[in-house]
Length: 203
Ligand SMILES: [Fe+2]
Ligand SMILES: [Fe+2]
Image 1 (cartoon, rainbow, N blue to C red):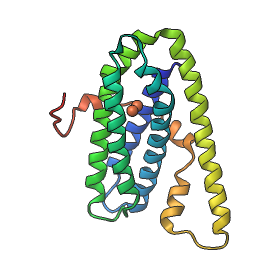
Image 2 (tube, helix red, strand yellow; image 1 turned 30 degrees about the vertical axis):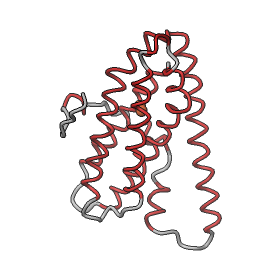
Image 3 (cartoon, rainbow, N blue to C red; image 1 turned 45 degrees about the vertical axis):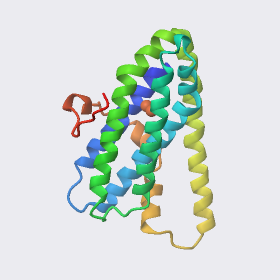
């Protein structure tokens, strides 16, 4: 899978998770936290492989057409990470949780639209097929090691906790970890065709 195919696949998976979140019923707090945990895991790893591997390569693409788009993408990642941090600190029962999740979804959709609509076509043209295949291999391997590292850290944390009782929230987050379940969801992304819920003046 080349780099762009890999990133688009991730985008679809996250979009499917947001759709699942929207389908949760009133007051389904533990299901909401579980889905938030999956979304955060997906986005954390996705942002890391973009920032460590894809964006630096894209930024250096010939003719410099992509540099500004990459710089903007880094800034958008920062905004998304801030929201993820705020949500992580909140309880899904908090009356503001859904509102913040909606904001997160809209920010992610906006960012994905810019990547898929503007950045990726330019990078594809500038880097060519072989380079994209090579980047794809590097990103896939990094993705696997990040997912593996997270599982190890969580296992170690569970051991440290030992007989102590982790909070229900921690248990939910841990249960949400295996990437394979998110990866297997295979949902198609339809959010772009639904249009954006919130108008953005920057486009
Ligand atoms: Fe992306
Ligand atoms: Fe991104």
